[in-house]
Length: 111
Length: 111
Image (cartoon, rainbow over the protein chains, first blue to last red):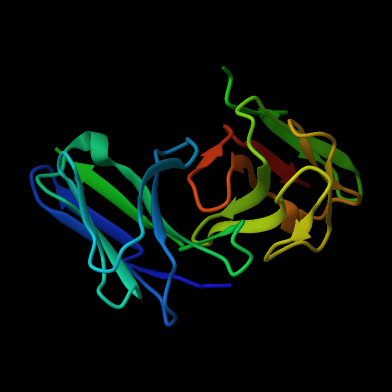
């Protein structure tokens, strides 16, 4: 399958600071998905990127897909306490039906 | 619509006991998935069913069996539970390259 590595594993920021998590693969990805999991909750889909160099925004969240389709990033501007959780990237496996998830980046935001 | 439901929410087993985790979806998804989540390990795919009548192994299938009972239901069975199977189990429904919808999870402890 198409393995994805995520960094950092943990990030602790003050409210109002920016945050970025990175997702990297050694192989070209067909697409990349991002999920958010709140503490004690289940993963919830945020977005899917498909095109080389694609950039999508959702309010304070900016998602990028690299030109070579081997990396992706999620950037949060001016974090809020509601951003707390673990952010996962995921790539479609060769079967086309399953996802390989990165290990996630856990974000802690202190007021 | 309930989305994806899982039962039970919590379970404690003794080593060697068996149990079945139930999952049902009312979103008419062809594909269904079982993941386990352990601290620092992200989400690892146990088994998936690309469509009714088919099942395939994921990354960590050993010690588990699955049944795709019909389009709505996908169960995960532990024949002889081991402490290493202590985890949070998530079921998800989806459609190939599109987003996956996760259930609330089952928190399983094996003593």
